[in-house]
Image (cartoon, rainbow, N blue to C red; front, side):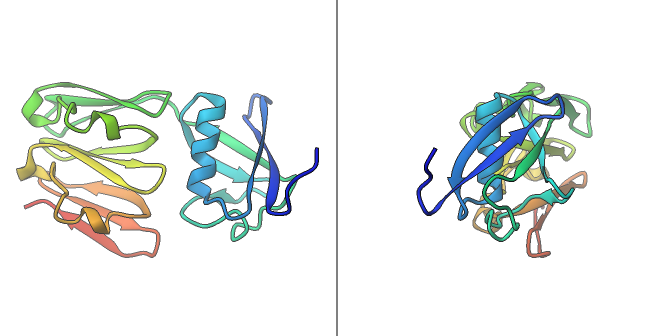
Length: 187
C-alpha cells in the first residue's frame, strides 16, 4: 500500500492480540488516536502505550510523542465502572463503549438527560455530594447535577481544555490541566 507523504500507519493491538491497522497523520493528536481506537475496536479505551512502554496521553501530536510509521501501539481497554455520588443517592456507570448511564435521585445527578449527547468518549467520572463531572478523551469536561454542588461548570467551561485529572469534594470540583494548572468550580 502506498501512503501519502503526510500519512503514517500504526498497528493498534489489544493485549488479547487483536490488531487493527490505522492510517493517519503525524499531526494527529493522541486523544484523537484514542478516539479512533475506540471506534475501530468498539470498546472504551483506558490508555495507549507505545512499544517502548511509554503512556501516550494528552494533546500532543503523534510526532511529538515520537511515534513513527509502522509503530505498534498497545490499547488498554477500560473496564466498566460505577461511581456513586457522595450521598449514595445517584449513580453513573461508564459503559464499555465509553458512554455514561445514570440513575437515582434526579436532582442529585441521577438524571443526565440534559447532557446525555455529550456523555460519549468518557474516560473518568468523579462525584461531589449531589453532582458529577466527566472527562472525555478530548480533555473536555461535562458536568450535571445540583449546581450548588459543582453540577454547573459553565463559568469555567472555556478553561476546561486538556484536562488530565478530576478531583471532587462534597461541594466542588478541581481539574488538573495538561500544563499543570488547576481549574476549580462549585460554591
